[in-house]
Image (cartoon, rainbow, N blue to C red; front, side, top):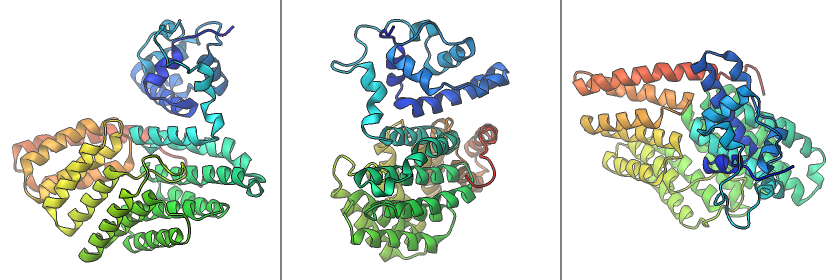
Length: 417
């Protein structure tokens, strides 16, 4: 018999939208608890979709098994008796029932999963989320592609889901330090994009490939991918957010090549495109790109061009615009700002930003973040004669050891996925 319990409200209050997002956080909590309790068996715990469905509608006969209860209590900060006991009268919103929460993703296939994966990736890093995305792709999305090419709009929805999730898997693989897997996923995403009726999805993949090329020092490829994406959009629907991202990637590459005038023109084009973007996304299949993202890319381009005052202004703007839920983005923003300040020889302020970075990045397990931290440490080393720098470097080294341990436990499997 169904009854209204507190569990759905508890997960909603913590931003865990949908089964996919909850699973990522639950498995992470299980691994943390396994380490702290010295009980490796906890690390393999998971919650089935059927159990989740029952909990969301209050179809329960008793409490979950003890190990599962331990993880739920660790994750949600409430006792199992509270989680599976009666909901408070004020919990929830008028007109919303538990069935709406449970089935909200069925009215727009895969969209809720895409948003859940994006949110978890931003908060935790790709290493935590990659396996969940690949599992969802192979078990839920891929079977729906059979015959989808002949189904009109439904076919576009199926292929759009496959494209965006495959591109997401590519970025998560890169974030976890596996650029070989990232390249495989990007190539697959482009093949899938050709099953769509317009070039928007392919242009979105090209934007991701351009960004990855920048991360791996392939500047010419970054320019080529960005311009190919812009060409795709020139003959199809205009998507201002995607145009802005492609122009920003082009500007980053031009700045690394020392092409000052071209880089500024591309940044101006990115700003102009973003002013035309509607408040709501035009399509869930295009990766988000907002003012904070543009400010971050602009700061990096200006740093490469040696325009330090302007770079510092854009880096601070990016941090102001980016809220606390975007832990990885804020960590990258702190790195960029600290690098600019060191280039200006404002070492004391750079140290302050460095301490903020230690707090911001402590929950993010990302090889990409680790590589940028290594660059920042080497730049701080140029001022190691200062006591405050030596103290910061010591703390960064300790944080680096902890991060390497976490990354080691999240190593992705070898071979193609």
